[in-house]
Image (cartoon, rainbow, N blue to C red; front, side, top):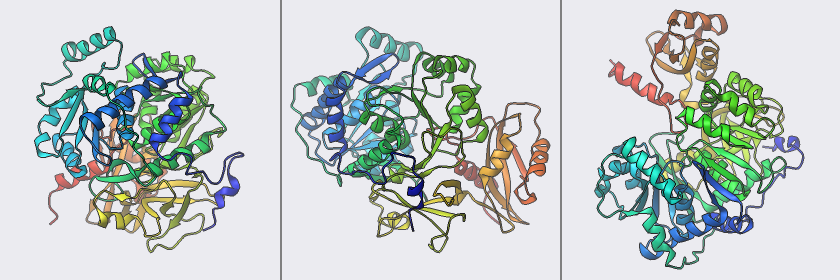
Length: 565
């Protein structure tokens, strides 16, 4: 199709990017450390690493992995850390040693962790002591040969490190007993690596940088193979998009979302390292009071998050101090990972003076596909235009391209699209065509300017007597009720209509009734969209970045219903 969006790009944004600007993420890091050596790179709990320190420490860790452990180019190393200073050091150390990084959610159960380690064939792992007990339950059933453990304060100055580690371990008792006899401490690894030279491992665009696990467009968790070329391209695409708004070496970006998730990893870490920014790491964004305190004392220019996080921040006591402290400083607020609700976006702009800029991406695209212009004056509800060097099409179920204004599945092609799924050729063939087009599994529509709107995940569509119901539309309507805190809509089996709409919700008004919810929907939605069932819950299942997991609700529903008769 014709790339109609290019005619409507904001001034100064190129239509194509130079994918050969950097040979690899390793090349990018080393150049950026040289350019911004004296600038702050990462801050955690009031402690800052400069780009010079990042260069030195990641060099030491890479030398340890390569020279002491004997790990070779292409072997996999898992990182099981929250947002701590150790994360970028371990990540870049592994990449500089030519290893493939496998990001792991620290909150995984033993079963989930074993699957990921076994599937990836990880030879080494860096794990926070708080979660080492989980690893201890299963490590002998994996290929892991080398274990590096770390404590929260390991990269803090000595006195603060002692105090933080003592509080975490002794006072808060957040480190369950663990036993890994062959484990080496992170500090010992750095000390050992300091005595070795880091060999220059030659990396090119087709070398694998990450195995990034995802539920993908179908089925169980799979390792998306993201190459150095994929990630360098996405950094360059993102940089081209933000270039007219931000300044190199002068930005402070708040990173509350976990770096082991591809959204924060590319958008915050990789991209803003290239820009010489200071990443302020929020270790536990679920601790909203602590998060509010950090934001109130940080003068930040960029923040990224998801709808649920922005909603919690806006409703938390003390957020007015964040707004006051950063009045006139904030340049960009990016919302991704899930659909942003209009009410949240409007309240954010009123409080912070800038709109929430929505974009769209998925792990299989490194992840960013499209975004709204950064000079937008208000929230649009759209997910924006394709980034430079990105092609998109809206296709029907037979694969035929649809014209603007019609809903269909979004297909993507560009240098950021993954090489495939790790050791899963059949799954790869299901979503990736021979000519490089990725089937996202997301229903979208494009207007005549090339601006995209997200409609729904294809697998989440509810069909009621032949009529399609988009859960997001019903959720948006339910959230308009003042007494609702959170809501998620799923389809449930129904003898009459095939499927019916069910809303699972958390209420903040204890007197809110199911009858009130249904009456509100009846007054604002077509009859087939109105929920037949309302279930009140204490909480809703969420992903690591706070995205409500409809699939978990559907699984629970199916398990409760029992086998079909």
